[in-house]
Length: 479
Image (cartoon, rainbow, N blue to C red; front, side, top):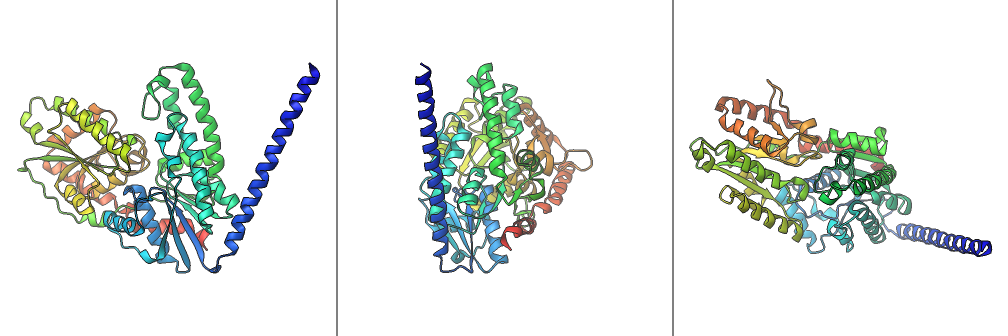
């Protein structure tokens, strides 16, 4: 019996050693292949800079960061070639660039931008991993990273979507300098606290929240994943974060405070501040505007619930309620997002709000400007919003903002103290309804004071401030 066990252990050891040696050999050969391909380049004196943004055609705040960063680099550096890794295989380069210029009112040197199309983007879609989603998407991003590296070997790799598990691939196999702009940590202590408190949310399903053993397993999983996340994050040479909230979490998880820079994302505040409001007290509708991508974390259902609570608060003022309209404007990335819009339309009917809510999808920029001009109140319900570009945009356009009492809106954007108030913060549906009711019943003079304070506070989030901060943070790996 002892002989059998010894033989079994010996076989396992032999197989493990064989697999380890084989994997190491593959890694060494792959690295040599990538070095050989880089040496074959005919433009060795030109620096190749590649942005990793698989959803570059999505049209959200993250994409504004991408295109403003690209514009800043092209303006600052002449001796570079700029590439964008994208998984938007259904869009031509001309389509992508035209949408970027149209959506964000940008002018780009389109002839200096080359797209590298990736076919493995499906590996990072959440729908592919009903369980262990964070781990599945992270492993999927490694698959996509190898595809990207084999197609193009850049000198500088800049991730602008938060795929931290790609950094070791480009650092160790590609020999690249690594920069990143992190909008939102893949995992955070806040997520862990929600699981520990057995709170149900979009990333903590009901059956897990109600089961102590499943909760314990998820806590262990999150803690192990956070260790991995910290290790891959430390592979970056320069780290940019978009808010105080994100900075606190990244410094805690990655432990690289000396190379972490807070760079607020670019908001087109100068043009929005010049917009003239088209509203007056005689308007048929008082528009409450929500701007944001149709994603689960944006918590659009909470906005509908807030309107339901608001109707109860205004029960004795039916005339005022009949004038209110919630206008939800956002972009859809895929069929899953479009199904989400349909589900919210059904929820609005269920709450008897179909006459008080309107959904608009993928609107052009000029139409969005008209929405700003005709709206009075802004609404944003995402819990722990990493920053909140749409919050700033609404404030710059003269809307009175009601945002979630967490994340970027709480720590960086909205001030609620008396004498310097520039908006409102809320937490649950009733709290949102109460804030909106306060705005509706405030004197015009008091609301004007809040609007003026909001517009005066947003200059620190301008595109110019972003470009200066981005270039300062990226210079160590570019010079």
